[in-house]
Amino acid sequence: MPLLRCRTGLGARLLLADGLGVEGCGFGAPATRVGEVVFTTAMTGYPESLTDPSYRGQILVETHPMVGNYGVPSRARRVYGIPLDYESDRIQVEGFVVAELPEPSHYASAMSLHEWLRGEGVPGIYRVDTRMLVERIREHGVIMGVLSVYPLDEEPPSWDELARVLSSSKSYDERLFALETSPREPITHSPPGRPRARVSMLDCGVKYGILRQLLHRGVEVTRYPCTAGADELLDGYDAVVLSNGPGNPALLRAQARVAAEVATSGKPVLAVCLGMQLLSLGLGARAYKLPYGHRGVNKPVVELGTGRCMVTTHNHGYAIDWDSLEGTGLEPWFRQPDDGTLEGVRSRDGLVLATQFHPEAGPGPWDSSWVFDLFVKMVAGRR
Image (cartoon, rainbow, N blue to C red; front, side):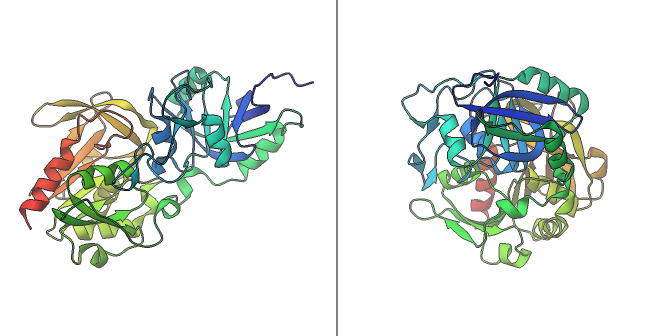
């Protein structure tokens, strides 16, 4: 007779690379997945977080204790032909860790969180001490882990077996996740009516929120695979966008060179998250890995010069070294007041704008959505 009593009929085990094993109830799909274990401080917005391509390759821990209470919305809710409540067409995380999994109660819910993860083949674990896991990550840094979900009427995988799976897997920093989240061919999104501008995008895993913000401002966007060259991005377009995406920016050397080429082309450029890292690396700056990253929807940033503070959405595990900007042609634009992380840069001529945070939110506050207004005004004014 199983020791666990779980309404899903599933058990789960999470093993971290430092040897910590956590047992709980399972939800979603019976499966075993390996990923970098990270946490987010967002209280809401789990449909957006789970579908954010920047979480590819990671097992996500929610700090909020109750997750799933408003269910999962229908993909039929769309704007400009793009799902309104999702940041991509699939769940991107390797696994999901929550404290409690309540039944959903919301007018827009089309299914439960358990049903959604099960349908997409993603394992989850609940009834575990997420506060303990977050404290461990904050003290020791992000760490690789393996999550296994199994039927309670079957023998669970042994801890030794999970340790072998984990030890035989590549680390997060070694994998080119951006190639997995990038489109295979160009995709064009057009706004209603005549476009104010046409921009290309080096798409290494764009969040749909960025597309929605640009389309809302009348901009036509053509997304190119992240293997595209600078000529493809520049020819026939008014500006270039360098998207967000997952993984270690140091592995994307070709993309960094392309980013530098478009940044020095004389055309306006907007770079977000990974895009800012590729831009900075291509121009000669250095990147480093944060101990436990910035992930949440309540992160302050301060605009240098004005002193304005905004609450913003973050999802990045790497950052650009302030001291390495000299000689790049870039200057600091935003900083994170909690730990001093560089959160934005721009060129001295104002043609290149880059944020480490996410001005599109999705989920999160819209304090910084004016960054898109600034970019689109600059692009439209140069046509």
